Length: 213
Image 1 (cartoon, rainbow, N blue to C red):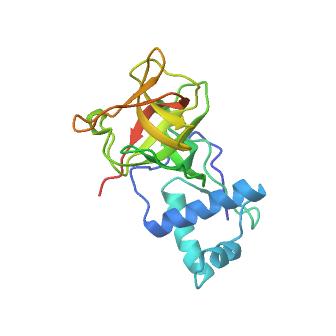
Image 2: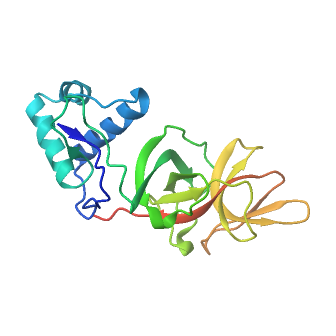
């Protein structure tokens, strides 16, 4: 069957996953994160609503080829993620954030692979999917994914994930600390800044991911 790659091999990440392949990989990730052991092919078939184990096996073979899994003949429950890849790191995708106006945060974590070069050696990181166009002048567009370093403050003018207690919402903006208020500035010349008396910075944007095609 299959197990994690124990070598420092680099998965062929340039080979993108199909929707079904991603569903299979996400199923394995969530199963392992929840139960601390990998699913069998039968459990994957049932959990994904597939008709046959052979169909699951075909997808697993492809994920092996692309470097996400590695084969092993030792035992049946041996489907594990390739966690030895030095070029990619898995962080949680926590949900959706508005770049066009504050919205309520979505908290349904799922794993996402990001280039390790985006992340510093220290700190906790997470990702959020962007909705809206208020940060386009910084190259952050609707449906992009921002990578965020968890931290309680940023320098003036840096892009941050900001919680607005008075509105019970989270937004993505440039943050400026003024004397008695905080200015939140869109990176879009067509939009105006707005002000809040209370803002809790939850993280600094350190990278952007975009899906093409």
